[in-house]
Image 1 (tube, rainbow, N blue to C red):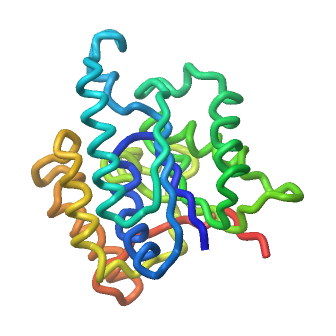
Image 2: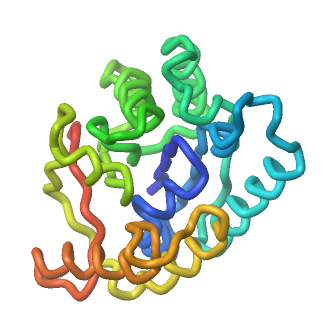
Length: 226
């Protein structure tokens, strides 16, 4: 099975489904990752102030995390950090459409549409459009994942709220997820921040307890075509 994980920023792929990526890869599936935004320039007053060196370092961290998770490849784009809403939606849709046409994934994982972060919301909308179930579309299953420090911080006040209905046992890969997140040392935070190792493990244990696993990742099935 070929899977495509679409993320707005470097680290979203790990936070949202790093354990599932590692499990899918271990089970012999081909996992590919697409990172839509550069993920760093919103920290500067003007985008052009960001040092090229820092962008290159973040891209290296993404590739290191991809390797650790066992994914086959990662595709990096350069949409402006926390400014996806300034880019014509059609442009973003076309990026994803080209990936879907070229890679032919059967399963796609993407950001949840009700997240606090605007880039996550735009990515979800663009993915939904790019994978619409027309004749010839290879995508059979479309899932949305949560991102700690974004999904829950919407406090279910943004439509639509995250309603997981698919749970993946990551008991054997939670440590790999934590290690992959540590590659993003500039994005990780100390406990009690949601992106801390302790919080990520607690989130996985919480979802695991819902369905009888030690650790789990939660997803919302958006569409399944059979």
